[in-house]
Image 1 (cartoon, rainbow, N blue to C red):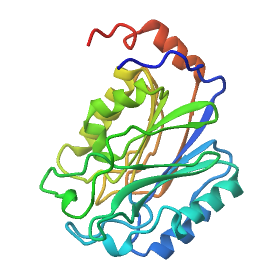
Image 2: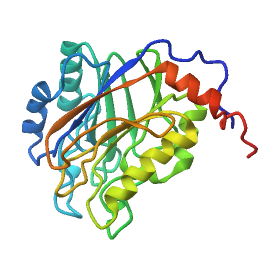
Image 3: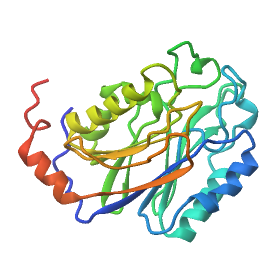
Image 4: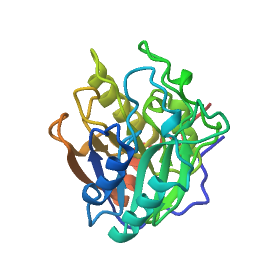
Amino acid sequence: MRRRTDLPPPAAPLRIALVQVASGLDPAGNRAALAELVPSGADLVVLPEAYARDFGPPGSDVGAFAEPIDGPFATEVARVADERDTTVVAGIFEAGPDPDRPYNTLVVRGGASASYRKIHLYDSFGYRESDRLSPGPLAPVVVEVGGWRVGLMTCYDLRFPELARALVDAGADLLVVPAAWVAGPGKVDHWRTLVTARAIENTVYVAAVGQSAPRYCGTSMVVDPAGRVVAGTTDPEATEVAVGVADPDVLARTRDANPSLLNRRL
C-alpha cells in the first residue's frame, strides 16, 4: 500500500489542546469533570486513554464499567464539544460482544464523530490487558478535523510502526495518541523516543497525551514532522493543558525536504 495522493493538503493551522489528567475510578465524577477540563479556543482537544474510568489495580475487571458507544460518557463528550465549538477525543471502555472483555475505545465527538477500538493490547512489561479487554478490528481509523486528516492510535499502539504507517497511507497528516503509559524504568524515554520517531519517519504531526504520574508517565507533547516538540506539559504529575499548533506550511516544507514517503521501496 502507498499513501493516497488524491487528497488535498491541510489549508489552515490546527490548534490542538492536550489535557493531561489522572482519571479516577468514579465514572460519574470523570464525566462531570469534562466541562471543566475541556478548554475553549482549540480545534481539537485530546484527553487520555481510559479517561471515562481508569483501569484500576492491575488485572482488575473493567467489564462492569463498560458503556455503549452512544452511552452517558460519549453523550457528555458530544455536549461539551458542541458547547466549546471543538472536537474532543477521549478514552472509554466500550461494551462489546464479550461482557467480561470490553473494548478499549477512543470516542471522537463534536466537529467530527468517530470511534477507534485499540488494536494492540498491553501484554507487556508484566501486564496482560488482553485478559480483561478485547482487541479492536485491524482497520486504521482516520477522521477529518478542521481540514486535517487525523489518525487514531492508543497507548501501546505507539510501539507498532506498522499501524502509524497504515494511518499515514490512509491519508493521515496528524496522529493522535491518547495513553495511560505505565511508569517504570526507562518508560519516559521510550515514550518520548517513540512519539518523535513516529513523527519523523512518517513526516506527520503527533499529538500524544498521557494520564498523569505517578502511576503513569504524563509527559504529553505535540511533535512536528521534523521531530521538534512544539508544545508539551511541564509537570508529569500535574493536571495540565498544553496547546500546540499544527502548521500546514511546516508539514509541506518538511515533506519537500524529506520525501521519504515517496522514496519508499517496500
